[in-house]
Length: 501
Image (cartoon, rainbow, N blue to C red; front, side, top):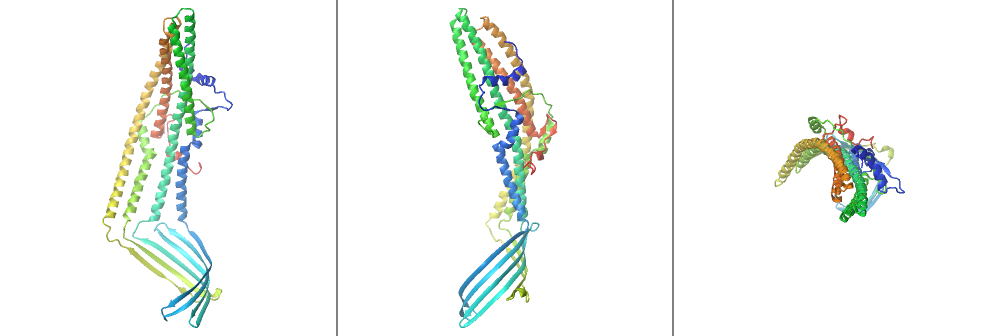
């Protein structure tokens, strides 16, 4: 067996997998690169779709709240209202019968006042009324058109602005949802990369197992010929048969694992589960220079989780405001100025108008609540301190995570060098011992150990390269700095904008 370099092996592994795994099916096979997998996940991933739906929910809630701050127009129409009642007149201590028919419309323009949390409204009521009252033998009738036009102002006093608070809470909820979406997109890249390389490694394991099977078959054929010629003991053939069966079993196990990992990748990407795929990947890893101080500083300046913790603090402060309003001293002022007219002739409704101003002020004065408000305020203040502590700990955790990833990167470079040397040595060792086996100087059991060692070292080298790539991606996510390109990742670019929608 000629010596083959790892890079040559990497280039031919996909072809070997294609020819040996029996994937010539009626359905076309799709070649999948990491970039293509990420593109598919952007639209097909169930996790990202769920995050988008959550973001849309908060976006529409905020739109609805902002629309509610605009003038509201309403029209109430009562085409007919008839009643006939027997009533008692306290002035004359007599009973009388009242029969009434009325038709009216009520048009209202209502405008919330955001700066003061008040409401100003303009209302106009127009209608026609026919009334008949019968008292003993007397009968009075009235048929008139009427119109009531009045302006009303309702203003809460000595309390917090509920309109502003609710609007701010919805804005923070939307910002938080947008941040969650951005974080989800970063995690999506990490998860897709992990799933993608899992399939790649399963594909490589299968190809290595098939190569090992081919070598074992070759060894088996050699020993059978030797036993037949009387040049080797019969037990050597038994051992070769055992090695061959083990190699076949390994191939079968790796075929199952390969199909399982493909299904997991397709499920996460949102692909058709019946679409066959083949992984195309370049796992060569070039060392990237990493500045630890820059990574930490950029992470503290840009990590979106810190803004989420700040939002938690703000929401806790809003909760404290609402809690302090429990059993609070507050008031309400209601001002109204209107003009009313009525006449049997439509054109003379305001011939003798009547002004109808009114002013009302009310207060709610709590007396004693058995310490309820004080206890609830203390609980809300404790919640604020807890959220502030979470913010502080989040900063520490970011520093720790970036340091760990940095150390893992440095260690992984060492592991790559070691794995590369081990793979080369294992290849040379196997070739030497294969020649010894062919010459009868080595048992089949010993050769199988060298074959297994070679397969393990090839896999370890590939895994070390992949681990370095994943750790480099992890550093990009932790620090929001792409050291491969030498540029920052701006959080705003990860948010969902209306254009992206």
